[in-house]
Structures are given as C-alpha cells and as structure tokens.
Length: 125
Image (tube, rainbow, N blue to C red):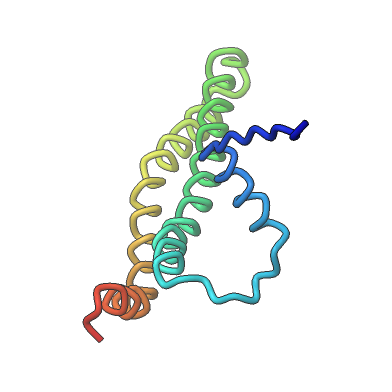
C-alpha cells in the first residue's frame, strides 16, 4: 500500500511564514530602494507628530485644570482658572501649525535623498 500525502497551499500561510522568517533573518542584506523610500517618507512626520501630541496633551490638561478652577473652586481660583484655560486654548490652537512646521523642515532635510531614491527607482539616473 502506498502512503497518500495531501498538501494544501495557502497564500495567507505563506505570507505569514515569510513575515516570521524576516524577523529571524539577519539584516545584512541591503533593503530595497522602495523600502528605504517608504521609511524616509514615513519618518518625515514622526518628530512633528511626537511634539504635537505632547503639546496637545499638555494644553488639553491645562484647559481642563482651568475649567475646574473656574467652576469648582470659583471663590479662590477663578482668575487662575481663566489664565490656565486661556493658555490651554492657545496651546491647542498652535499644536497643528507647529506640527506642520516641523514636518516641513524634516521633509526639506530629507528631500535630496528622496529625489535620489525616486530617480533610481524610476530609472532616471
């Protein structure tokens, strides 16, 4: 009697196996230009995003403290609450312009490398 062997190919399993293998394979092989281009493009907003999240979070908390001071402890801390709330509102208003400014500077900084990689990918050396 011959032994019977059944094999079922699954593209999903194959893709998952490749992803797992990549985690355990040494990174001695140069990454492709397209991968480097994607990473550079994604990194342009990283610094601005972190700073904007920090400023936005602190500003929102400051606005909340100002609201608490004016509504809950109105007798003693009303003026302090108004000042804290206004600072919080100001911080929330400047968060997006700060993000845009930092991201623009980062993009200008990496633009030559982006152009070089793009031209290599498109074959216009």
